Length: 399
Length: 134
Ligand code: SF4
Ligand code: SF4
Image (cartoon, rainbow over all chains, first blue to last red; front, side, top):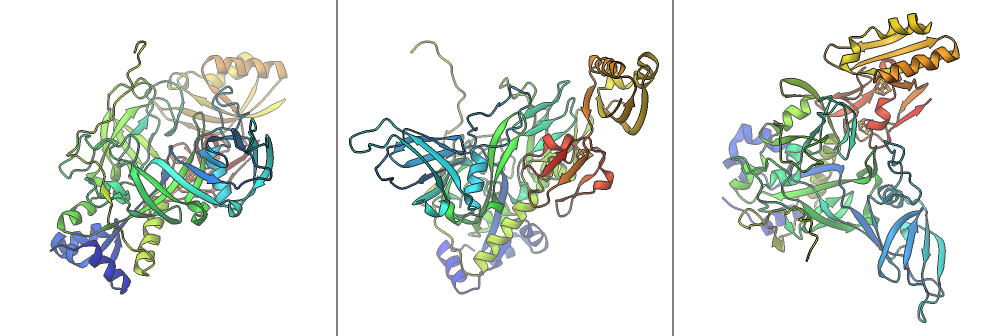
């Protein structure tokens, strides 16, 4: 029994579609079996909320009178990239304010940066913009200082080159001192273990071979509608996989795009990682159409069946050594304790399962109400049949 | 002079009688407000230490030389529920279980009665949901 996306959309329009979350589907399949559930259910909603570097916004702030061609620009003293066009800027989530002491007073607090400005813009706050230029015949103005509000911008677009990691490392610290990483504060000698994935709710863990999520897939992006724009940077389909095809290492990624003006601060938050820097937490929900039984088996994946590698962030990670201390499941991670080298280690998350669950439910409501139709991907993401892997940098002294 | 401090130890130090040395060698009064020391683990002691100013600073140097982290005790810790995303990064950090998570709902809550004001959650919270007053 197979369905098409067009058929599912007809059912959504008529208000007849059966939609469940990637959590609810697990029990359903347990009770009724894959064959039955594949027939009954039309859409499964997946979601994730967590810090995602490689995020940012671009916007057009409109032409001043006289005109200026931005050469350099700052938003609340945080540099934005002006090398696009006269009045287009890109602001990256991890950009720091000009006067941030960074790690000179270790560990730095990193209270404010690109991610926080994005959150403030979305909350409707005014942002101070400063622009300088060299002046041209057609763009004579050399300096500009003004307040910006999201409502006054011509376009404001969230465009994240890498989000939604399919799986990720669990970070621990084998050294004798506290370390501060992008996976949080890690206490010495296996004092804690931090993970960052929604596990059984996470989009790409429910579509491990990218059979339905592709370029052009319509998604929930931070409270508004967004789209998958491309595979994300570092997309790595050819990692070790389990029998269920679920990657056991960081695998695929998504580049996503959406209208910043539709977004809500609850789903888009500036993040301060002590000793590391700033970034942005992003909330994403992705619908998976129940096209056939194979997809039904994939979306029924549960935390017990998803394994993540435990990596030492005091040495193996920074030195780019491949060592993995252990493999643990997301059900162990979410229980609050894992065992590594015979030691019980308490776990903490960086992504929020509670928020992922909320997002999966909001997307479910949108689809049930008929407000959100599914899209046919324009093109599939590179999967296991390609030979794509991520390459490390080869540093060279000669050409 | 009186100081309220949080002392965090390494395993090796836990086995040394440091409060004894503070009293005997530096003539300080040590009042233990809360203690959590597990064998083979880190220990954390919340203390009120009083004595002469120079003795106090020498005593602190002695502790730092032993590798004990000495931090002032916070006077108030506030958890901003609105800003909390329930990520759980603070859960393994808060040893007194003032910050806890319901494993079913994965929702985090804060019980100020259990908080020993150690201030460790401030750095661990990536979402600026914790505010600490010293
Ligand atoms: S200050 Fe923070 S970490 Fe320390 S006991 Fe209170 S809540 Fe827990
Ligand atoms: S670390 Fe901060 S945001 Fe995360 S659960 Fe704790 S208080 Fe909430």
